[in-house]
Length: 558
Image (tube, rainbow, N blue to C red; front, side):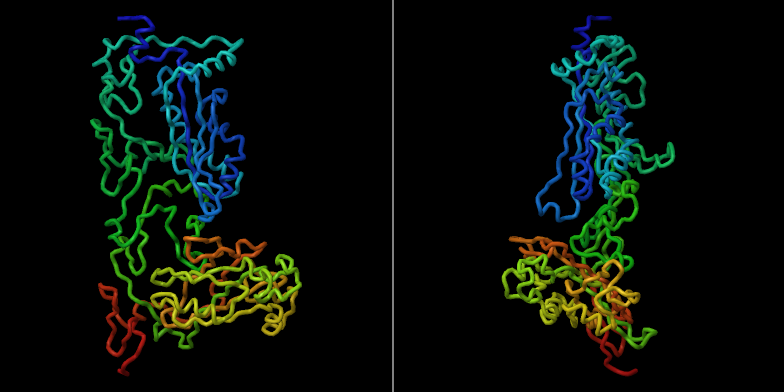
């Protein structure tokens, strides 16, 4: 039975001049430059409007949240920010008769064009790596008087909006749409998160499960795939509860992520691809609190499952896909084909610390030593070592202005668990003298610059301003190739270890660089030194004639 408009509104239909409010939020992860671009960019809302198909004239707010400017927040190397554009508009202006149709259209459009927004509006402008974590679309219905006034002003001289299809009273639809939809000439128009299942004449009594990025689908165009699917295509929807029953190996809302094998056996953490480390080769021997995602050298947003696929990162002394295998101590293999062994030497270069132009003394004192006014200001640093058993330990804070070879050796050799047993250190303050006596070169660069103890990236003209540490790993458990040391030079005050209130980071143009394999090792770093078997308990079972914890000591000649 056809009824008046007022009864149609009571039944849940939207009148032509009723308003809807839609908030489109995009959450990104990147570094501090991403936050700067988000805060300064005036075109982000234009990109969102273009992608969603909504008119920019209905924008009521354009906000950025999550970009902390506090010093400690920026030390982590990455931050998460959310950009939200809010629209308040009459439903008739969108061209849709129902809020569900509007919502689905915007959701599909944003899913298809989100990576373009990241690439064009953010990554290209900040010249940084930006990852899109999530897209959230919130839609609410309201009678917004101010928006109504804006619409009237915007529509002056414009044609009147076209008519909207008539609605019918709930009695004409199955079960009055179960209280979860509006009744139209074509049957029930279900509200958000409700549907008709496979039936064309349903009663909005079936729950809709979360839509997430599909794990597998057919590409619709070049570089255009993984559209939104219910339960991500890796689960079944329980229509009674609206929850996904995920297939084996998948979990989370909408089956959005993988599980880790055996929950990493209690000996590791389950992490996303974006967090996993790649320690293959010297270039990726990074330790400590460096942002691991910086290791990726491709356009990060194109890795579609970076925040979906997960794997185990094992605790120290554990390995395997599920972190269930114990690791045993490692040492040099006696029968390595090169019998003339050589330990690895790494160079730690701290630049621009002996520079009177950046010190308070301005050359009035011997600024290469401590004991004078502010000569040791902003000179603190520490070193982090990672063993081949994945143990990480950091030295106490040291100061470049009071530094001696003995101090560095003591700090390294007293690290726990004997990770470094016999490190030896050579320290250079007068680099021009070192270059002259070692290489026969003066202060200036010459054609023989490749003989300097630095890589091209750290080959400087005025070496007298720098301090160099040559650290050699002479111990048995540090034989063979080792992970690169990491300099810690960030501010670290009360409640932080090691405490550094005046770090090198506070000094103008100073930084700490590690040159790995300054002198490459000749030797191996094998489990149980290749002269025993690693037991299930993590203890080496040495072959006859060998002993100690990593089977490096010969007890008999057989």
